[in-house]
Length: 104
Image 1: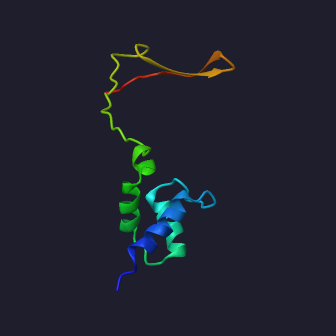
Image 2: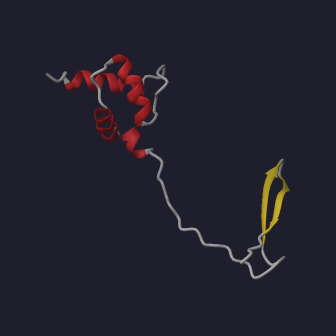
Image 3: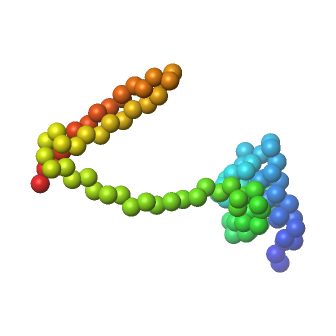
């Protein structure tokens, strides 16, 4: 017989919301690993279902965007350059300059 869903939900809730828990406001895998230590009958599907119903998880979940990349094909030597720079103490510092050369 399956265990009472309220007991599972309480274990998942404790793992997700308790600030002393290492899985606090974390992902499904971490919350599941923490919950299983307290209640071994919890399944990953239970954790996923519970977290999907929680606004704190569903509103702040990272959005994954996949952008198409364009191939860089320069016409010859010293025609295209890549510049990587970083701000350090409000001064721009060039870190790396690369000549993009494509050989056919």
